[in-house]
Length: 136
Image (cartoon, rainbow, N blue to C red; front, top):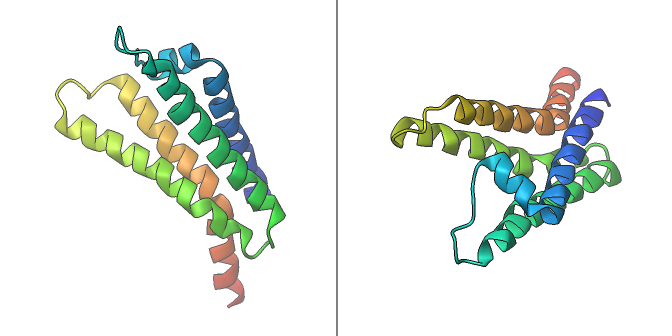
């Protein structure tokens, strides 16, 4: 139960980040350190859509299903989103390793954030596996 609460708080924070990014694309632009290309009006749409809508609805949907579904099925719901966060951290580490000038303190902070977020989201699944192993 505590794992589900921790995961839920993490998912709620992810949904909040997405909602805030949809409403304030300038905030997410500054947060991730990206600015739209001058003369291209699509920039704010990208921030609202990808870093806003995608984050908001993926985290919110996972959160709702985590509590709505049967307790032995629900933990499986977190796997895709946790994998996406882990993939983001791994992709960033690949960039640090391969791309010139990306081995920065800020990038390593984001790696920690992304991998940590993944670990917190997947907690209910890990606890379910542990329960099956103990009782099985």
